[in-house]
Image 1 (cartoon, rainbow, N blue to C red):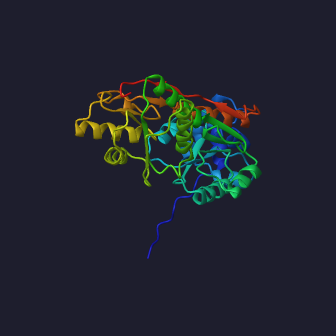
Image 2: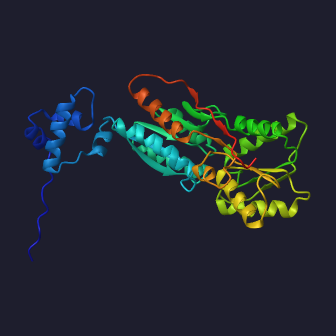
Length: 338
């Protein structure tokens, strides 16, 4: 029986010969090294493409060579917030010749720890993480890693290395102050499973503090042990209104997904916004601003967080140390629902 012989893979030396440069120049050019001119990089890449040569990135990493991969750990991709962050991060990294390698923790601290172990074992150039509730082992792993680490989304905690984001507690406090200044006095809350989402929990804590400043307490509080979604927000508002009499003046939701669901409940039930009830959210999603009555919310500057985190990684690799904590801030969107 005749067997088909597999074609031999092209070698680095063949690429070097075709490009008319040394093997070390080929290696540096394929890594995008600044020590190689752009003309040489293009010549080497053309030679590699014509031969069908692929760089063995794993071999380079195992040999202690530089990696062009950046580990990224996010808690979820089901919420549009994190794809927005990832896009900002990816755009900046790709432009510099680096590529994100993604892991999803599902808001599980033990899963997050395992992802950190797995990604670090591949020796990435850096690591970006939106932590859920890091274990002591996770923090120890990141401290011991000889690479830049950027914790994103939140600056309310002490980072292992660097942090880029905003104060979620301050965002909740600012929204409470804004709504009270608008004349609201009976304010309630509907949230997803914030026991696993410390950023949403921090916003609620800040919101309560803002109410306390004015001598107020929540008129009702309902959290549902499920991930955030539009459907959950719609169901949550229905449940809150069923059990709370009299009806609160306003309901603050854990995020815009949930708040949009609340708006849909009002539309289906004939409840006028904001005359009969007002609604506020968090994140500044396009979906909320595209409603017939634009959502009152807080913009979290998600793409900017990703871009800034990438800049921190790239700056560290070039020998420029960023500030340890970078606050990208937040912006109030007054909307029309409150």
